[in-house]
Length: 46
Image 1 (tube, rainbow, N blue to C red):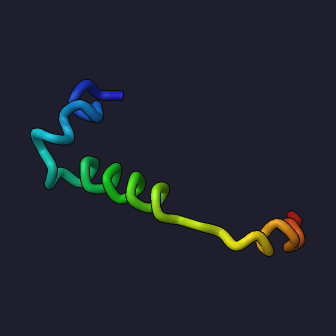
Image 2: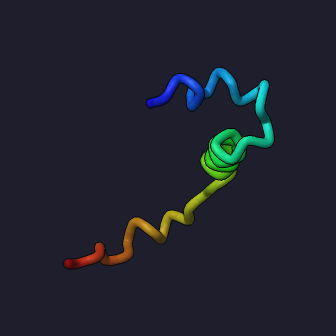
Image 3: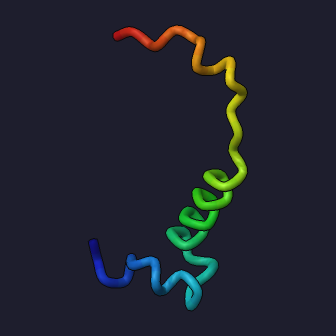
């Protein structure tokens, strides 16, 4: 990883595409909720 890609710089460059992507991923991770029924679905097969 390039030093400029480190998360510690996100606050200094909030509009940078990588900062935006990390922010979006954090938001999705915090808000996503799956219904219990999802565990009963069959798994994907190759």
